[in-house]
Amino acid sequence: MSAGPPQVHNATSGSPVTGGGPRVAGIGLRMLVGLIWLTNGGFHAYAWLFQGGGQSAANLLHAYSTPLSHSPGWLIPYLSAVVHGIQTIGPHVVAGIMVALDLVIGVSFLVGRGVVISALLGMAYVGFCWTTLDSFGYPYAHGQTDPGVFVAYFLVFIFVLSAHRTEHRFAGPPGYAGSPLTVGRILFGLLWAFDAGLKWQPYFLTHFMDQLTAAVTGQPSWVAAYLAFVMSVVSRIGPEIVAILVAVVESLLAFSLLLGRGLRLSVPLGILYALVVWSTAEGFGGPYTSAGSGVRGNVVGNVIIYVVMFLYLGLARGRPTRGASLRLVS
Image (tube, rainbow, N blue to C red; front, side, top):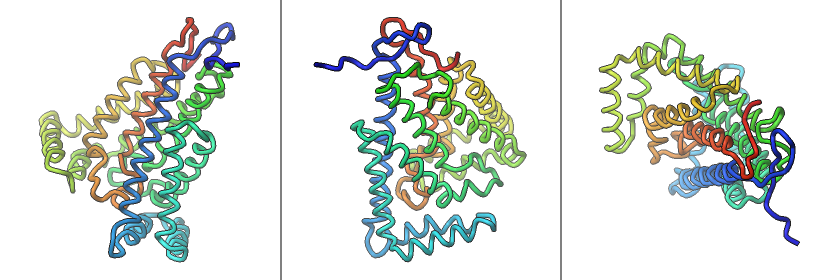
């Protein structure tokens, strides 16, 4: 006997209905994150395993050793122990383990098998990367704009768990109190609040153009030309005015996500804003020629993961069939 289509429950009556928008959104999110992880894994394999002349091992050691130069004193012993451990085990062995994790997580999300285990494994994996490759996001000075690239990757796994729950379990609407989506939305709001706090710092407000200038280094000519155009526009408007506008937008996004209000407007705004940041300050995630060492284990960029989470928040609002009302907030 066929099990029939997956079901969700009406937010008002509790009666089961056939899954629609939320289920499709969940599958799409899971597969998109899987593709991102496979992309990361491919670049990591090239940079950390397959470059000849001992360069691959040097790339990995460089990625783990770089945080030693800008981390606080209390973190140095831990980072030094990790680097020593990698040298003892062997850089290629460690790189092989990391690439294997990338591939396992990516394939799992693409095919929809072992998703919960892979998501939990991914959270532990990026947590380790955040404390080592990112050194907890330090240093929080001189224009630091976020707490590290791996925080967003950690949060997207929570969204994947919510997507998987919506796709398969359907114990209630994806926005009800205590669901992974609600937890993910609030934590995402806290991340934006932290980012916004850094944007209100005097250094960022008075050195905004430095963020764009730094993104040009190593980029192909067409990206450099695009960034030069963006910088000319910012210069005409006024860098400090643009910096204040950036801080205001991030603050508004944080409040909306934390309160669960105004998402109909803040979600598309967040997608647009994150894409602008990704294509400018992050230079489309590049330059990809230094993947695996220059970007501390993260390849496609940090803010593009913000886009993924905003997309799911928006798509999760889609109505399922038979008129069930699913909302992110009550």
